[in-house]
Length: 192
Image (cartoon, rainbow, N blue to C red; front, top):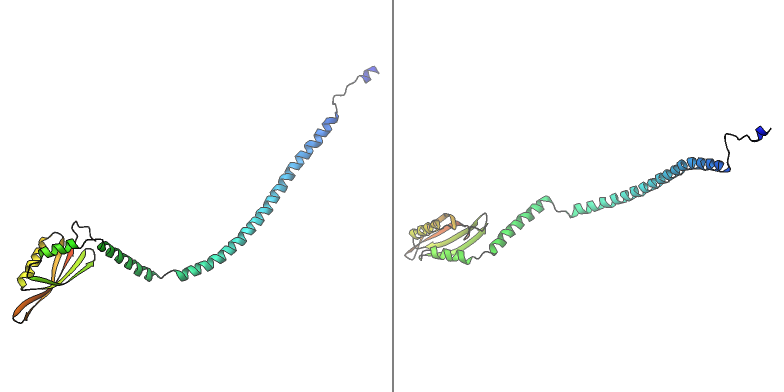
C-alpha cells in the first residue's frame, strides 16, 4: 500500500493552467472578432464619407455648370479678342514712337532739304519701320531730285520713294508739288 500512496502522477494539474487556457482561448477568438468589428466600422464610415463627398460633388457640379454658363456669357468672342490684340499692338507701336525724340528726325530733314523746297505736310506712321510721308512744293523738279539724292545718301533713311509730282504755273511762277515716302530706322536703328 505504501507503494500506491507515494505514487506521483505524470501530469500535474494546477489551478493556474486552467485560467491560462481560458485566457488564451478568449484572446484567440476575440482578436479576429475585434478586427472584424473594426473593419466593419471602417467600411460603414467609408461608405458614409463616400456618400457625403458624392453629394458635395453633385452640388459642386451644379454650381460649376451655372458658373461656366455665366463665364461663357462674359467671355468675348474670338474676333473681339483679335481686334483688341491688334489695337494693343498698335498702341505699343505708338507708345514706342512717343518715347522717341522727333527733333533729331526733323533736324536731319531740315539739313537735307534744299532751300527751294517747302513742306506742306509731314506724316509719321509706325509700321515695321517708321514710314514718313512728305508732301511739299519746290521751285523746280531738280530740287526734288536733289532732296531724293540726299535721302538716299543718309543711312537712317531707307527706300525713299517719289509717289507723285505735278508741275503747276501760278502767276508766271512755276512750281512742282510732290509727294514722297521714306522709311526712318532711327538714329541707331532702334525704332520698330
